[in-house]
Image 1 (cartoon, rainbow, N blue to C red):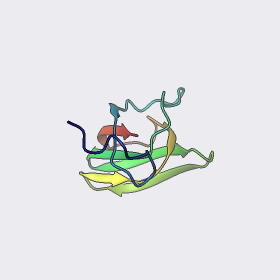
Image 2: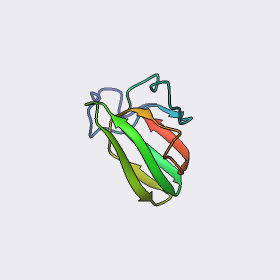
Image 3: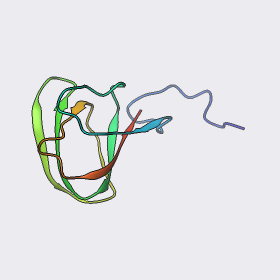
Length: 86
């Protein structure tokens, strides 16, 4: 049973899918996510969906970053156990 099957997907609806992120300096994420879950604390260096390259410093473990990231860079990312969610 899926009580949410008639709800449309939006930026505020529950996450339907997730995938492990391996930070990479060359390749974009295969799916443009709605948010990133940060399992292990550290900096997260990424490129936003709008093309800006930024670093979120000292992100605590267990944080959900509400950012649409096209790429999570290996260089400058110390956070671990990152999940892309959409």
